[in-house]
View 1: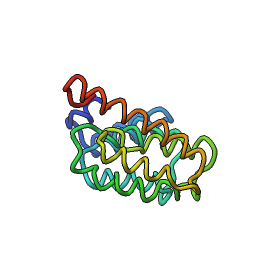
View 2 (view 1 turned 90 degrees about the vertical axis):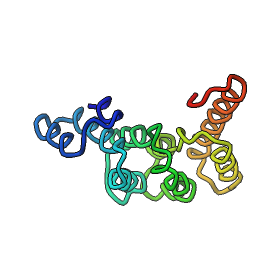
View 3 (view 1 turned 90 degrees about the horizontal axis):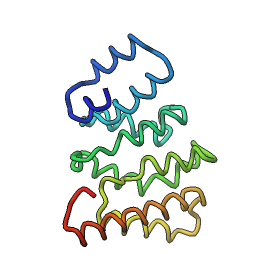
Length: 161
């Protein structure tokens, strides 16, 4: 169902039916990924509630939801969440700790919006001396990845690297 979801060839009703048919841990995590990947405002709001801790999710679900959330080709739908990421990531220390905190910051980072603006927002957040060290480490690595993607596009003239 992941590929079908990415292609826009399924919907939440079908995903829910599949989860009801086979409701085990593996299917729950796959369902969470697919739900977050849907190109739908309600699905994105659902996913974001799990990032901020407004709704509960296991660490495995947070990883799945975060990696499903940032789908290429959904830039207009996702742009407001990039703003929210930079405003809210530091506050996730209230709902997560340890590797779960770092993973949440990593998997919800707006990596598909790999632009100079996102890089600038990342660098600006890194200037905050009060930023949690686990989140800081994730952002240093994310900024490096974005720099590499931008450099590759500039050198080879391709988008979507």
